[in-house]
Length: 542
Ligand code: NAP
Image (cartoon, rainbow, N blue to C red; front, side, top):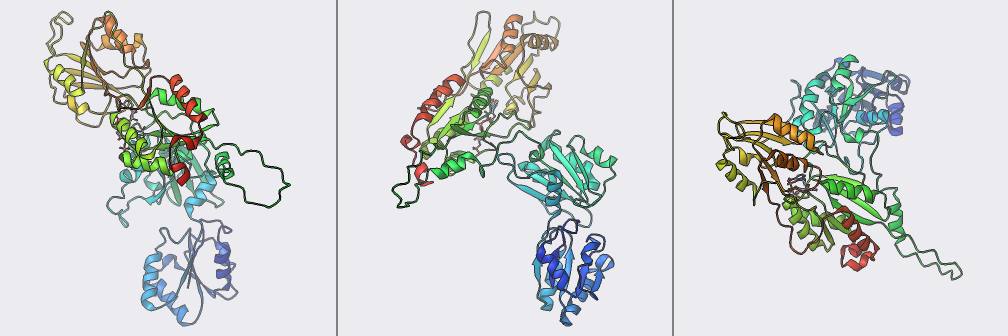
């Protein structure tokens, strides 16, 4: 009994072993609609050909057992690869029970044929290193708990869905919250066959395309950033860095003293792990991308669905699992320098970076832009925390002159970001204009409007916004920087008070700079040093 993967549809996409087994087996059992007819021509003359299209499992197993009892080899063909959605398991269980021996020959799966049709690698370094192969629930095969699309999409890995194109609207609806509407998607129907159809689009338009093309079956849906055409860093596999690193190894002794010495091998680029999440981080990464003395691993928390990603050797999205996780990554990725260029309020990440750098013996630079400075005409009330801002709002009564005749409830422009908005939820009197980059998902104060927008903002726009919403008070974090400073100028011009939440203190004893230029200067000094002189023992231990 030979279970054979017969591939995605093209007759020549089968292994040599599979073809030879077909040619030497006097019985061939195949699914008529799925296995290319041309493969049956390889069967020996006089072979018994059994189409399973209308047979149930017991009839198929009876056929296999009968052939075995007669001492005949059987080529049992399954489309694609037998390890995926082939109903192989129940046949093998029954053959085990009947004492019939068998082997399995793999085949080309449909997702691989689809990727080939798209001319895409599904695992692009820093973008996606995981492929999720799944399907959607149908009455005959419900999905096990925890395998719903919302859960599977949490990692934003490359996702391949089989047997799902007839429900593409449901698929799009369930995937959009995580992958975002602009995420690349492809549908490949009848992959590798003559009638192959390839649709490329985004989550926003793929359902319409698919319906217009009349696709209802024999298709796979592929989703993920790995499908995008370009803008990706190269992999390490063929990189200069890899060969340069190999060149660092001592040359084997040849005994030929007359051989002239090799020129010194180029020094391997210094590996910089850059914690992103700020405009400064993006600018720093963009400058370093043009410097072949460094390789940058750019890391983001993954809070924003559609982050602005600068050029970098590698991108990594998601937390590290605390300081221990980051320290382990610093070692395994052989990081030479850690730069924390997160937002000034990312206190947990900065504390974690300081602990991890210390533990791994990696030098750390904290790039943190300065806070805003009060100017004449400003009416700022500094508070030490968001909770303190909430307490202040609870007591705040707007100037009755500003809106004569209206009630005394304040109208607040709240720009403290999406996290921690739940702290404000208990404030039921003020009305809030909440501006953030992405929709908040926690509890909000009862009277509010959410405005989704992303800087940079200008003074004219901010002044008009404050006027349009008759704002009494601006509440913001002291984030610093030019991108979001216009609201402070507009508030000053309109005579509005501003509640400014103080930034957390940086971790003690860390090298700190406040500009990209200063960070580049600090890095230049580190890059020039001998990597082994920085005290990081992971360099040697590998
Ligand atoms: P946080 O409280 O300091 O960080 C929470 C956790 O998120 C960290 O412990 C870490 O997870 C992970 N994380 C944070 N930054 C990361 C990065 N660059 N790369 C990988 N993992 C990261 O920070 P947050 O206030 O939630 O902000 C999250 C991200 O948004 C930060 O990168 C920050 O720069 C950016 N941001 C924050 C604000 C703000 O107002 N807080 C504003 C704009 C942008 P593990 O513990 O698992 O390692």
